[in-house]
Image 1 (tube, rainbow, N blue to C red):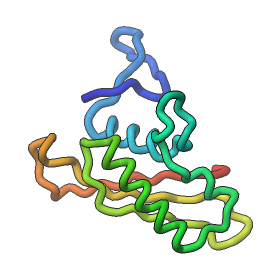
Image 2 (cartoon, rainbow, N blue to C red):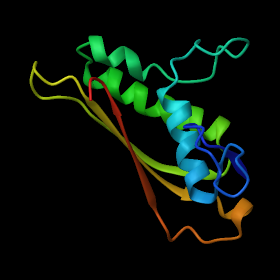
Image 3 (tube, rainbow, N blue to C red):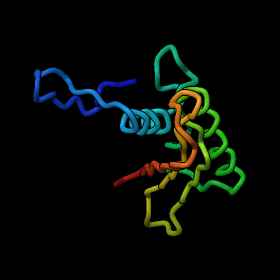
Length: 130
């Protein structure tokens, strides 16, 4: 499985847009799904999450737990190549910080990749000013 590189870098061999594959493709897909605001995609209102709304909110622990579960559900629906192990949302401790970090631990789906679930991988996303 391979996808277009979202940065549209040029393939040095043939001058076309380069592709990403394997784990790089999966990580790019996870970032795309989680960082897209729900409703932003035309004709696909269910794609994405409400992570961006956290930037201007003071979320309760219940809201953070809901968002963690929402991220897991949307990744299960839209990215069958992985099995999500955990989602951690690190919210800033002070009023001066605007960045929210999201750590997603996942395994490659052994039914699709003929691999074991021994190699846990982590994607760290930053939502905010940085």
